[in-house]
Image (cartoon, rainbow, N blue to C red; front, top):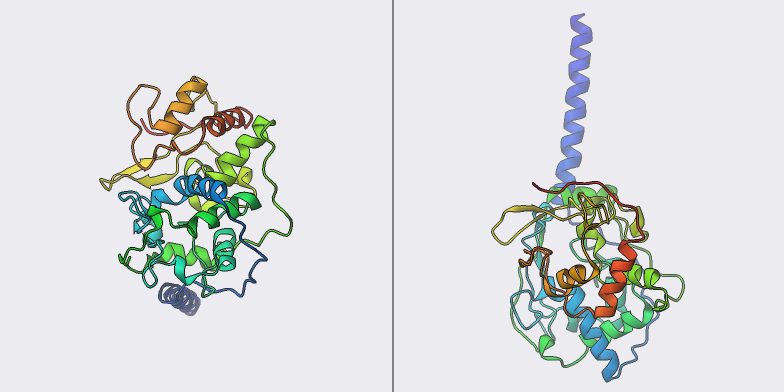
Length: 315
């Protein structure tokens, strides 16, 4: 009996040592790099394309890269502590401290589509990936990022290096990997189909589902509808006071979602940050007044088409 107990104890100790060694290796190693090819891309730019790209950048980039500034100088991302000490980069046109100047157009497209940086390292989900953005909108976004807009004027502000948490490194080891480059043309949505157009704006353009679904760890960037708790809310984020907040359920469930809202109330909330009760919505929800009225009303149409989820968030 004693011999059996000693063997069991030895096996448990061996498992603990192996698990500890693996954990230590993950914790002290950088996030993996990948040999992802560069996409074919030739920038086509004019004034209207740049203007469209600015609207996309205000939708996707400014909230992290310039929330307190008129420039995209970067900031600490305080609302996702589970990922570690994370800083959105300075993406102005500064030749040394601005990241844009260090990337070719093709490298930027690869970064935005797959999450693979210039040096091959993967960026975890604290940076949105855009695998569903149309080719024309991607071209518009790159056109804006290459423009002389004041938001991109060179700034010498240098953001600290990110310090991803063990959880982030573990997930990047076992689950989170770069997305594949699209293998076909991604067309603009058909605006006459309000539901399809709304799905594109919500999932492909504005990237609403990661925050408003159950958890960043279980979202599906390639097929957002497969994300756990798709638009049912409950994802854990943090406000500027360091307090934990849960994202709201925005399915059309009448008791726990927005099923009792009107379309105009939804538009006011998304575009101007005004809630159903007339009060301003709290961070991390930001007003998206750079989305057009047509785009937000299309999101409303799309949300009415998806399954309702009964998920009471908060008190």
